[in-house]
Amino acid sequence: MLNNTKVEAILFKTISLLKDLDVNYWLTDGTLLGVIREERILPWDLEIDFGLWKSEVPVERLINVFKKNGFEYIEFLPDTHCLVFLVDGIYIDLNLYSKDSSKVSIKWATYPDNRIHKAIIRIINLFFESKKLNNHDGDFSFKSFLKKLINSFGLLLPNGAKEKMYTYAREKYKYIGSSYQKELLEFKAIDFRGHEVIVPIDSEEYLRVTYGNDWKIPNKDYVWEEDTFNLELFDDKANIK
Image (cartoon, rainbow, N blue to C red; front, side, top):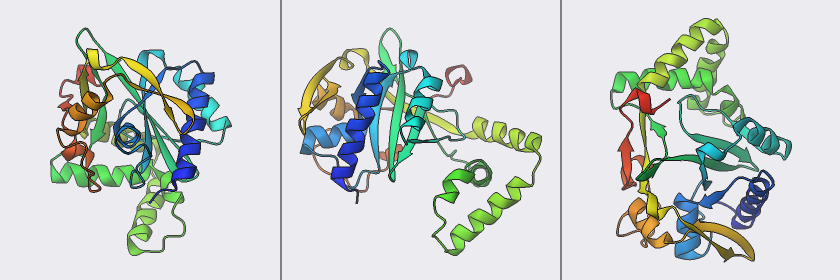
């Protein structure tokens, strides 16, 4: 489980950096759930979740500022609308939301349903995510050894071949994400541990839309692809650029 004192310090540091960048944010997903339902960061949650407006984020500048402040930028293979950082063993998800005339949505990715495509993409990911593997040098299991062996083989492949594989994988991912009625994305400031944090005005309805009517009941086995109520499929390639 996570160390709440450390996680809260990282939460407030992230908010400070976003304010310095003049980037609007709100707490979302598991982080919002913990703050509203239990007045804490959920100790079994593995990351800190923020919502940002995609159109307002200076991506390169934001990445550079976070890196200068000790955050490691984690690049992922699929074409998602999320920036992920790692600091002191804690992941920070900056989710980049888009809005149209009626709704607000975010694009994430999960493995395809086809088992063959899923297996191939898992291998390609090992070529792509070498930095993540290096974070587990103390793991001497056979599974870890096999991952590193595949990754080492990937280093021998020409860049052109790897880029073709990355393109294949990006096209085979299943792109899904949460969507909300635009009216729910109005915000207010509340106090959390003596700090001001931004949350949706109707946070309880926001959480009900996300997690269902039982959102007040803890679910430590939550799987986002299966247990998120407001997911939609981005099946039009024009929508996933």
